[in-house]
Image (cartoon, rainbow, N blue to C red):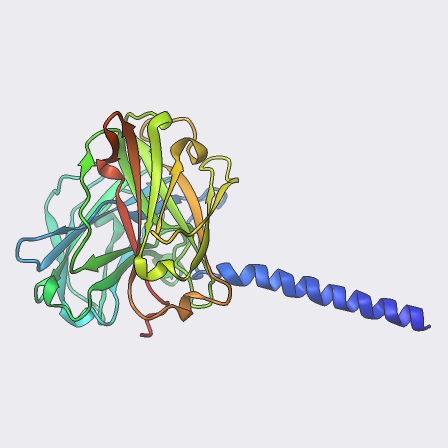
Length: 347
């Protein structure tokens, strides 16, 4: 009897440990909840990647910040009409006058007129997605652009950095957030300037794999998608630059192959906050103009969650370099910077 009782106890302990471990593996990557946008039969996803596309452009008077963002649609979204919800964090909201959205840009990056959107609640602006972005089926990446118009020059804002965010919502599903549609960028008083080479890259974007992290998350799941018009992977490297204020809280970063979805590299965070990996290790053979997503996971040090980070805005930059005889040159359309902070904004 004692032996049977001991076996039962051991079995219960083992089951408890398995359940605990199962919960623990889910907690680090909770992310915001939402609904998946699919084609009519419900079997095919619509969105593959979304994210900030290039460094922001600041007007001469520093009151206008223009940014570009990209969506890579796997399937036609025209039958699933969505709205775009643009938000600025509460600390920035009082300083924003309005936003200006470029009309239906499609594949191009040349503005074709614009329309003004006023806030419908503090810091929140809503407009029809198709007014800004072509959503028909196409393997190419679709581009949109908008400007944040401030009431004062950016260098007069109280803080050095602020996060802005946009998402797609589905009116047919009570305006729920659509997974993989989150785009987040950053406004800076002193943005980093990059010297680039106009060669090779067609478009790129840096965003979240699924949704932005929650306060309880101990890791960030990010996606850098690049499409080329001409390049050689033999001479291409990817670089990832992490905010100096964030580096001390990061343990390591994992990188996954874009088509095989297998872990190819795990790198401990260096003090410099900069990580470089060979393009060939994560990118399949180049198929011109197709955007392949390179997934990477940023793990915080043991005991830390996103909610534990000091209040403020953080940035992560991804870019592609090309090795030449005179050194590495940055591809012009490869520099993408993502902004994030604690969620919800509670500083």
